[in-house]
Image 1 (cartoon, rainbow, N blue to C red):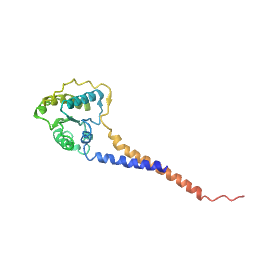
Image 2 (cartoon, one colour):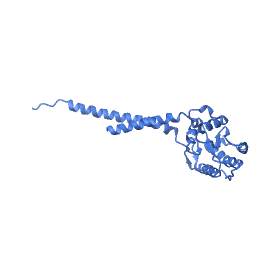
Image 3 (cartoon, one colour):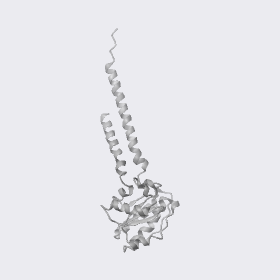
Image 4 (cartoon, one colour):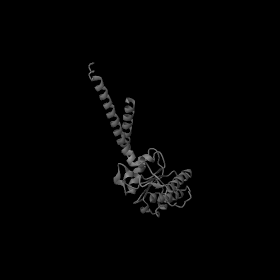
Length: 220
C-alpha cells in the first residue's frame, strides 16, 4: 500500500507540473520545435486533410523548402497569449521568434481571420494572397487553405512542389492535438485518486490501532 501511494503521489506531482510548463508559451511554439505542423485542438481535423497536408509538407522539405505550418482555430490554441487570436500578422513573427533558436524555416500561420507568414520571400507571400479561408469549415477550412498555400510558397521560392486537390473532409476525423480537458483534467483526477488511497490507508491503520488497543475479554 505504501509503495502504491508513493507512486501515485509522484505521478501526481509530475502531471501537475506539465500544464504549467506548457502554459509558459503558446502550444504551436512547443509543437513546432518537434514537428512540422501544428493542428488545432478543436474541432478535430479530418484524416484525409491531415494526411494530404503532412504529405505536402514532407514533399516541400525534400524539395529544399522546410516550411513550418501553424493553424490556429481558437484562443485555446494560443495558450498564454489568447490576445493574439484573430491577429495572424502579429502572431506569425511572434511564433517565428519563439522557435528561432532551433529553426529559421519559412513559417505559415493560418487563422480564421487570415493568413500570415514569417521568414519567407516576397514572391512566396504574393503567391498565397488569392487563397481564401472557408470559415464555415472551422479547423478543416484552415487545413484546406494550408494545402493550397504550401505548394505555392515552395514553388514561388524556387523549390517546385506540385499542387494537389483539396480532398473532401469525409466522416473520418482525427484529433488535432491533446484535448485541453485531458491535459488539465488528468492531474486533478490523479490528485483525487491519491487522496482517496491515502484516506483508505489511514482508515486501515486506525482500524489496526483499534484492534491492538481493545481490552481482552475476561474469562468466565
